[in-house]
Image (cartoon, rainbow, N blue to C red; front, side, top):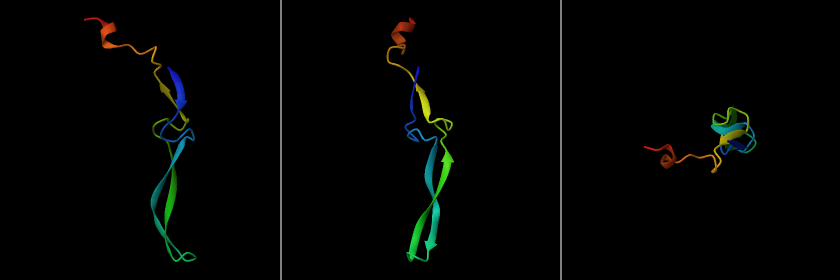
Length: 64
C-alpha cells in the first residue's frame, strides 16, 4: 500500500461547505456562509492509503 493525497480534501485535511446564507448590508444581497469541517475520508491527515496494482490479488490467485 502507498499513500496518496486525499481526493476529497485535496490534501488539506478539511473540507469547506456552505452552511447557510446571511444578508450583507454592504452588498445588499445574500451571501453564502461557509464552514470548515475535518475530512471524514482521510481522518484530517490529508492522505489516504491505496493499493498498488502489483499488490492487488485477483480472485484467480486465491484458488478454488
